[in-house]
Length: 184
Length: 184
Image (cartoon, each protein chain N blue to C red):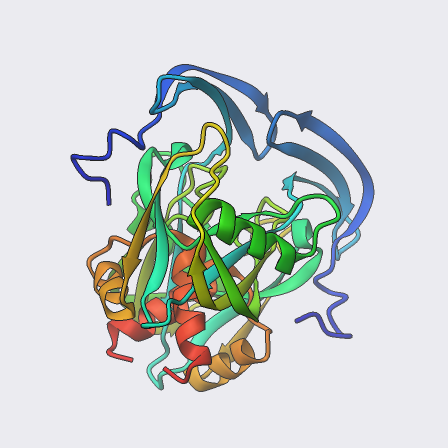
């Protein structure tokens, strides 16, 4: 929500360099001009963008995943999600991830919105979709990928949230944004 | 929400090393054991944890911030938030950040929950609080920190969300989690 009168807030790039490039993460360190004319450094992860899907079965139940997430060292309950491949649209990514991870195709896709999960240190955005008209075709997990599929009603998922069992940021935001879109 | 029967999902550490250590970010690369006995590498940002605050004025309006976020190159509407200092409790961080960034003290603090904003590549957790009984005492921004304070009713903020003007993941999750706690 940038505005014309935001000049007193805007930072501009002076110089940019890749300071780390690993298997998964690229980190850049940019020298920037502050709004008051001073200079500072900003370090951040460069991310290609991601998608998430709220997959709704014909009976209204949701298709979710339980997956061990090494950085937080625990099994997380999440909506299906994944990174955008080079040249891929976010809708195509969502359709691919729903089959590969969860094992479903969908007849109807509706874009709900966009999230920025980590504005402090990542360029990542997440486009998110509702998928309906699901057909189970079986998952095709990548090698080294392990996850369980969990089918829950909306009320069951809300009860898990109320007990502190749903803490994945994108999944919390998606659940409530999806409810809001349906007037709840 | 880990369970006793999650052995088929759990990854364990074999070796861990710091591969990048900058001004803001530390990146680790760990060699891990997969559930099927294979090996893989996990790269992630090491984060000290953070807090966010939903600050509610006596008339029910919310205290929010507009701040340029360099990684996403735009001004974001957000709830007050910040990183936990070494040895600091998350409540103390929340109290400190509400004064420093937004310029308010609060008489009543209620913990609402915890979020994990980026389980794919960061150890970060965010403890989040509702703050009520606010008194304006004036902000004390860090050098090189620039932000605007915005006061909005809950309905105004929801209208901004509906128009796509609230995309910060933690703020979306916090708004709806806070509403849910109040039976909405």
